[in-house]
Length: 213
Image 1 (cartoon, rainbow, N blue to C red):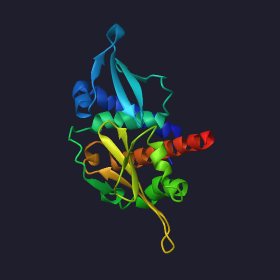
Image 2: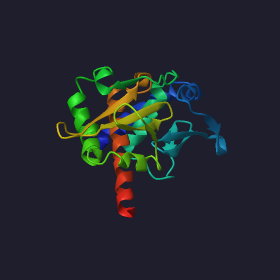
Image 3: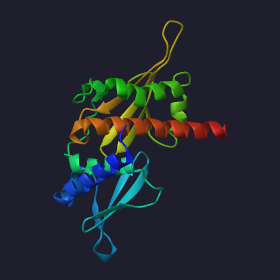
Image 4: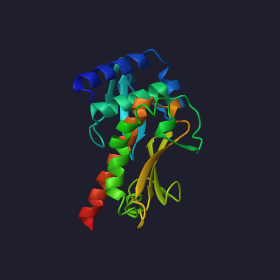
């Protein structure tokens, strides 16, 4: 489990890397725009799991705004990595599992605990709840699975949460699907982090729906 110091180091490395790159090109590849701001600043608005955050850049300082809420440093690192890694490839519409990303099989057990198990525990017995979540974030798909929710974790990174209904013979199942282009936008470690973040965002929305009902 990374420590706070690990994330602080990773953030500084990401900032240093971006300072050596053409930030405008990085934004274009990520499906974002670099906008002029006051006092010589530049701003990048990044959609992240249903909310939009503003990154302000001035010289060698990179600051995420407090609206719509403060980002955890781990999320900041993810968004900076997205800017660094984005290659500009179009979303293919072809779904793959985490096992199919580079070294995905090696990290799969950890990925299951991070993303698939929480998804199954929350929605396995009530998959229709995903339809209700889609009123807040994401889009319901007919496949893969009996019901699926597609959420854009980042502008060019869709994540699909899929569920299969159980019956008398088989228990419910769940999986997470990713666009085939995803490794052109995030490293395997960042893919795992984003997938977990999407799952927990959806779980949080489902809990709020439960309180209202």
